[in-house]
Length: 150
Image (tube, rainbow, N blue to C red; front, top):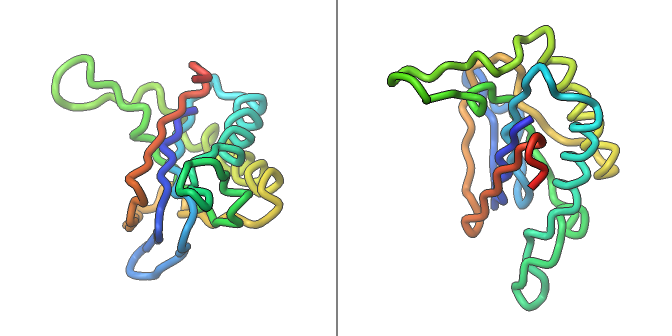
């Protein structure tokens, strides 16, 4: 799995003119799956995100997690995170899971994130043409690949 985690002042997802998700202070997570992803990857990534200390404390030092601040999360599926640009100018998405594999992984990730946070997370809609708006706070953007566990 690959994830792009962005600390936001606010974020929203709009589909066909309807705002389906909106948060204030929190995280916007773009997530992409590949066929080799497992429940272990889901659990590791969810725990890592829930405990990432990327929010400012009283001294404005990044010492607090999303759990510490009670922030919200929007999770958006994004197969393009697995783009390969090695050959030519048109990216290949061969490593990205097809919907029959990706949808259960996406749903499991959402459930795991909710369990780790102890609250509901918001989402986009898998496979939809989404308009994602955000105000990146910092900016703070972190990329995690569960295959590297860095």
